[in-house]
Image (cartoon, rainbow, N blue to C red; front, side, top):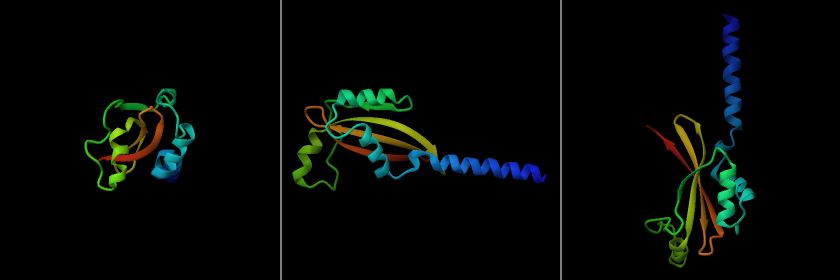
Length: 130
């Protein structure tokens, strides 16, 4: 009985350690910094796609080249930034998931200018509650 309890405790401890080491559990800013190290500002869309393809676990959710990334301008955007948001193009990739209380998916939006060079990266986490 004690052996079984100790074994269960060890397994639980290992699960907690493995879970804590998952890089997707880091903040969105920390994930963004790691992604920027792989795809710095100014990287071409073609090179970003190569990086995504080389990461077997990353899946491109949608390639919106030539489309507006937002149906409307977000509320926090001031009028001088509106043109930037409307002209931007993006690639969205799911870079992984982990289980918290719910399944949490991590997405990265690589946003490009008219010359298809990287201008920004946005990291988002979405919890699947059902």
